[in-house]
Length: 237
Ligand code: PXP
Image 1: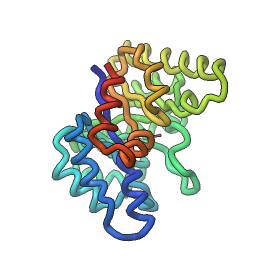
Image 2: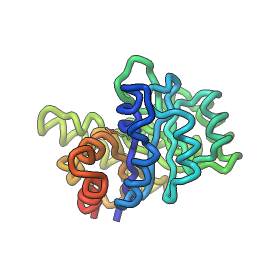
Image 3: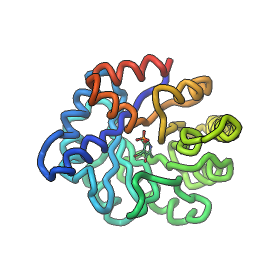
Image 4: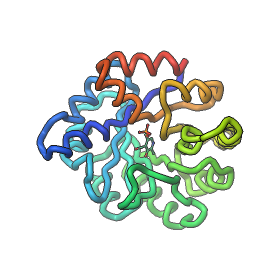
């Protein structure tokens, strides 16, 4: 059965809307784990728009499954990651004006930078995943720079406006999953996945982990974390 990583950034977004201390993404993470989550994902952004360093440090102390820290490939973030020691760092591109992460990282275009940062994180005992667009060349480049895992960007698939585009995107994801499997890379997928579109991916049995935020948090607000997590888990058989 594939694993489910729950991104709790949206709980922090709600907290930041009032600048207070609730709802707490740390409590949400505990509830997600009780509901069956296999990992907790958070994105510490440069502008700290949702997750704060306090959340990261508390989550490091209390997460019992796996803590996956998404971050930009900057010196500041590498410093924080090496200090806090999450189980996994996922490198993502970051743009100030975006509502959410829009693209995968360009490993091909910044090969030496990624090589260097991955070496540094490995030296500190942290595994590294690269969030990439579904491109065979990016998978090959991720392997070359010694990434442990690739997380394939499912946003364009999830947002496809017609069945042809959806099929094209699904094929691109499938090809990348197969290549990553051959190269012995860990394989995750994420972005825009929900209770409907996720079942189109589960036929790709090489996928090891699904990282999902918005749709699960949106459902949890209405039905509770336990049920929202449990219902997603049953789809990942
Ligand atoms: N994976 C990565 C790398 C992301 O940046 C995000 C969004 O923060 C997700 C997964 C989760 O996406 P969504 O909230 O659309 O499920």
